[in-house]
Image (cartoon, rainbow, N blue to C red; front, side):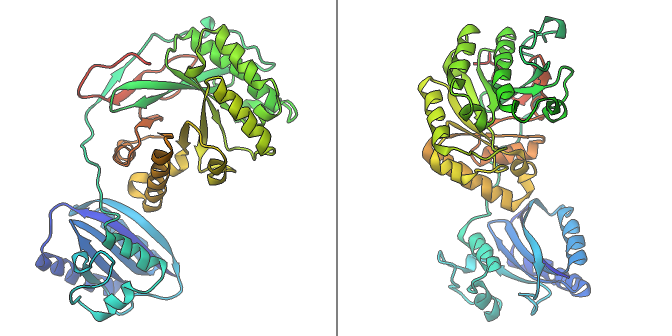
Length: 408
């Protein structure tokens, strides 16, 4: 099977045409022996390269390219099977992207007329290359990650001090912070439902019948709010709700309002995260419940965006205060071109409509750094703190300029 792979990388130093020709000459010999063909674009210290050939050989070559210390920020843009080669004329050829004008057409003689002809051919590969010529795929994080520091906001509450569950099945909650790393503030805590000894929801909710699951989902939020108040959480509190937990209970909003008032929490502090785990059966009723929540001062978030049923169609119907990008899109974004393009589009959309973006599932500094450079400011993930069972966990984050602030 033949495969085509496209990647982008950043040279450590700016390369002259002579240096590039030397690199390409060496690559041509190696690629010819591997039966690999392709093209290399270069501009502003950035490479974009297309590799075509037997799948296993392309994968092996890309692995070696990733470990080459002459460049960094190697991002996989595209990889897929092909039925024929686009660049079967060359074992490798290079085109300086500076040879092209703003509309992508050649303005000077290029190494081969065939290259110019190819870049004007209308397929996905040529459009990716044209995007590179236009200036896309040529960006880098604007800062170096500062050292990580640790802060413990408060002593943990012990299990014996925690409140008694009010639900039919005993439950507990794990609290995970949502942080703004640029200011060093905890902007919210998410209350994640757990079993009595920390079991994940999927492991203990089998004891709840299908008919009762939405009532259980709503009533469990009373425990979450009460435990957050007991922990002294003074910033925002995020709780998850299935859409049907709202639409199946006409009193859902008044129930939530009663719970937060009882615990001395302001409506503006509560964030209801509507998950995409199930389809919205009654859109009009759902939107009415959302209006009630907003009218009471409660903020609305779409959780796990990109992983569920609704996606863009849900955003077309109503715009939340907060959008949380699912970890399946976030994790590995620093080295994955399609994920980067998706995140940039989401961030641009949210900026235009005033929606706050939260990146979920952050587990390494590379992803965090790329996301911050792309315009994301709020983060959640184990890089900063693992969820603390019935307690506020110790939080790790970079904060080079000032001391840690009190959660707001």
